[in-house]
Length: 400
Image (tube, rainbow, N blue to C red; front, side, top):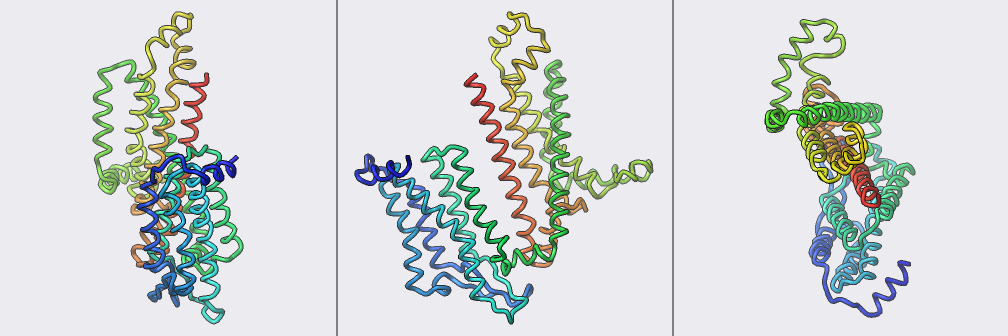
């Protein structure tokens, strides 16, 4: 189905519109490809690395040939048609697929067996290119109205290619991989603890938000006070909130030994969990309240006219209709909590933030990335899954 569309569109463009997003982003990518350092080689973990641009790596001639790939996208985007956009999507995907294998090839030719401590670092040009390519993928997804399955399939192929390079050992010289190998057990434990802390905080805040919503629906006077209190908590900086919780939690742990045995103290998981719950309550409660309160009155009247009890109306009418918006609240809260949990490492709560702050203290950016990249990936996965769930519920409601 795709190939005939591409051929037909290339024969005679039906529109002379231009894709301004690609026409702006791709020239920047070409400049980054040719002008910035893509990779670097460090003799060891501490020594500064030597940066290499594409021209340094493969020479001027080959670099110009490789630059034809993004230049082709510029030419295709000059006259936007469906077929040209499909070709642009293919070329952008190809560039993303080529990245890990290009790094693997460079590593194999740059580091010899007599350099056991040498490592390859990612340069600014590569990060700029990755960022721009992801923006282009998002733009093409919207222009082509890609289905969720095709969109997920593209990223599975890209991530699968990267994973194959990692599992095959081709990216072992990468400095990020060397940081992981030296701390693999700590990393897995930190990842598990980070996910557990976030999941517990979001789960508890969901139950508390549900109770608050039911209470506010019974008493409108309670609504203003609850939202004001939750808004105040939301404005307190995270480090300040940790400090406010330190003294009372330390007192509780010292006064009641059974609480101390459970781990309740001024530092550690307790203040981190309470802070995450506090920050999660406002978006969770507001979305749930707006969703439940926004169900059309005529639907409730129709259900009441059918003889349904208040309990049946809530469970069979109001809650199913409000569920997509409530899921959006869970999505916002989860993504927020995943990021905030990194700061909790400052008070001994553990998690992936430990690598970030250790890396900053040691001026080791690869260790910072070892903590930051999984947090970003975790947030993107959770955001995508919950967005898909919300969209599916909306679609099911419309079809129903």
